[in-house]
Structure formats: structure tokens, C-alpha cells
Length: 278
Ligand SMILES: Cc1ncc(COP(=O)(O)O)c(C=O)c1O
Image (tube, rainbow, N blue to C red; front, side):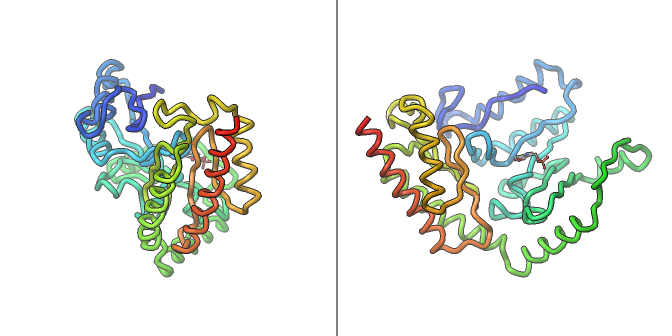
């Protein structure tokens, strides 16, 4: 497996700025393919918005460019939609934001609304046809589990009947506005990113140098403290390194978003106070 640079505009690996960069993070993938040898590469796999790695929402050109590169070299594009699939970003699948059709999609969490373990691999016809006369000799105890399948069908029905994907799209706009306000109000917030109801806040100790919050003041005194404080105030977000990752229920309301970002506003103020006192 060969890794490529992320579409991380806030800390661009090429030291360029969007949009003058020409989306170098995407075009550089072609160089990697040429160096490795296109015939050595079966597939390119990417998340529409990487959640666990710094919550990165790519520029609009990024995935159309990757699709075009993959097509040119006969390489499959696999979208890892384990987190972004089934409405999280305000569309059924994240790749729909850029009208990109991947060759395969892996997905899980939102498929059953997370209540029952189930994962899926979706594929386009030209990939599926391969299995008309060949098969992968793997099995597992829980494959095709009827309870998991029933939960998935029920979740899909609820997404449609309660118009939850539409709600995620509308509330994604509200959440984005609230995140932007946090950025304006707090020096320790250097960037906010989101796609629908998947959001990320990046924390720094110094807005000018963008030094990660934990680098100067220590992980325990900043990130671990932040985690405890969020829990004390009854909010559930994921805090990893100096990133706050946000993924509220698709049924969330504007009032609930305002409450949640209000809690973050309070804690960000507190952490700035701690930084000044240190
Ligand atoms: C983006 C992403 N891909 C893949 C996985 C692994 O999925 P699973 O746990 O269903 O094997 C995860 C799990 O958290 C994930 O977040």
C-alpha cells in the first residue's frame, strides 16, 4: 500500500494555497502512479471527507481529478464511505457532492444507524460481472445476518420517511455557520471544516504559527482536560490529537446544534484562559 498526500489546505504539504495550487495534492497522485507503475496498482482508496485523519474536506476539484486519473490508468476508485455513507454529509453518499461515481464503495456505520454491526461493499456492474464466474473463498459466521439486514432495511426506511438526509443537508449549513462563529471568536481555533453533518475544529496554541494546541501546553493539560470538560457538560464529540470531530445525529435540530456549539464556545474560552495563565 502506498500513501499519498492528503487534501489538507490548512497545512498544505506542497506549501501552496488554494485555488492557485492547481490542486497539487490530486495531480501529485498521478506522479505516484507513474513511479509505482500503473500496472502495479489495482485501486485507489479514499474517504470523501477523512474523519479520523484531521477531518479533511477536500476542495471541489479533488475527487473529479482523482476519478479522471484513475480512468486514464485503468485503476479502480474505491470510496471508503464507512463514516460518510448513508446521509452523514447531507447526501446519501459523500462522493455525490462532486458527482463522482466510484467503482466500489465500502460502508458500514450509518447503514444500520450504528445500532447493529453490519458492513457492505457496493460495486458497479463492471466490477460485479467479475463474480459471475469467479468467487472469493471467504466466509464469516455473521455474513448476511438476518437481524442486521432487518435493522439496515428499517434504518433506510427511516432515513426516507423522516427525510433525515434532507435534514442533514439543511442542518449541515447551520452547523457550518456555528463553526465559523467559533473560529471568529477563538484564537485557539485555526480552522473549521465540514461536509454536511461531519465537522472538524482544529486547535492551536498560536494562530500565527499554527502550532498544535497540545504541542506547547502538553497533551494532558489540554486535550485530556478538554475531553473531561466536554463530558462534564454533557456533550459527545470525538477529540483526537488537536482535532475536535463532530458527527451529530442526522435528526438534530438547529436549537440542539446551537446548544452544542455553545458548550464548545464555553470550553474554548476556558482553555484560552488556561493558556494565558500558563
Ligand atoms: C473511514 C473508516 N473506514 C473503515 C473503517 C473500518 O470499518 P469497520 O469497523 O466496519 O471494519 C472505519 C472504522 O471506524 C472508518 O472510520
